[in-house]
Image 1 (cartoon, rainbow over the protein chains, first blue to last red):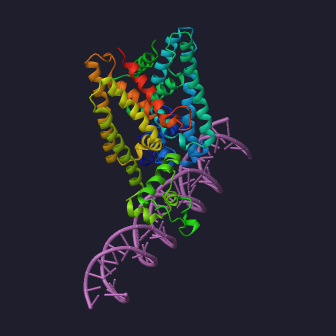
Image 2 (spheres, chains in turn purple, cyan, yellow, red):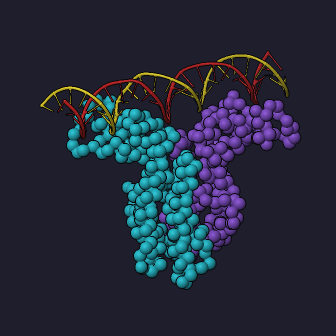
Length: 207
Length: 207
DNA sequence: GAACATGTACCGACTAGTCGGTATGGCAGT
DNA sequence: ACTGCCATACCGACTAGTCGGTACATGTTC
């Protein structure tokens, strides 16, 4: 669509369907280009070209190039917060809940792999205030999962001689690194990777 | 040392000890600044200021700013290759060898945490040829570890219903993510983290 | 021992190009 | 008439890298 709407190609030839609103097109273009080339190797000009608008339009909706990046972070955090509430707050056993959370975070990560790549590669490029905010929200997520493990350890379901803090760091490290190697067209689906990562996590905690 | 030798400060006032050779000083400054601020947010001028030389000197030894980055990658690969040979090629049990490799890669990663941060954050900034070369060498390392796991699975020491490939991805993901959270002045030493990461890996493979 | 040639290790002024962002204005819709 | 949504033209700051130059060390010749 963006290619068809290339400014070089002249007039807008596609009439239906209704084009995506400019802010969403800008975010989609920014996401793809930041994931592929990096935030700083991507110019504003490239983003607006890919979105089929000009810089005036972009600066109408976004205060700065940095705001585009931050908006991607905000989106990731909204998704992860919503899904955490969904997976963790059930009445099932702690093992099932931990497993559900583990599978879900992998599936969500893989579903938004471009966002994941950008998220972990560009943290240092965020304004320090926003970086602190992002880290704090990540921390809360981390603590929710640690709480599940500690709950299981307290009840004897998980072995208690493993640092819950470190297990969470270990697991999330594995998940966040998916951006480096996972291929959507590879042999394993997101779900399969999620199930196996959950198995590995629960194996590590097995009594 | 670098501060004392600041160009703004005028003449070179430090006579002993013999100053580190310029190329090493440039690499040390580049490593610190790339880890702290990112490759592209760091200017050549900042690097040479920190190294106490000028850009002319830098370009005498390095063809480009990109060459500095590549040299950091080459250094990481040299270290990891040497240590792999050391840890993997013993006559001990496969469990002990896998454990030794696991501890070693964590300790090495933490010892060179700045290099790790740069390595995983800047891969996309390498020239495609060099990126392919780096990935190939990483792949060989990955396959060595997978081979250890498969050897253990074949001999019945490790459970065989876990994908060795995925276990390696899982473990290395956790290790490579250390740059995001590990603090040298934190509660755990590199060795302690290494031992616990090794425990988690071997737990996941336990029969 | 001095003079000279050469090579090395730098210095720092400079440049072309690119960048993010701004100011302004036209147009369509209400 | 006003407002929102853009496009266009332009600006100043900054960049990586180049280039002409200097200082010094070393080896050779006389």
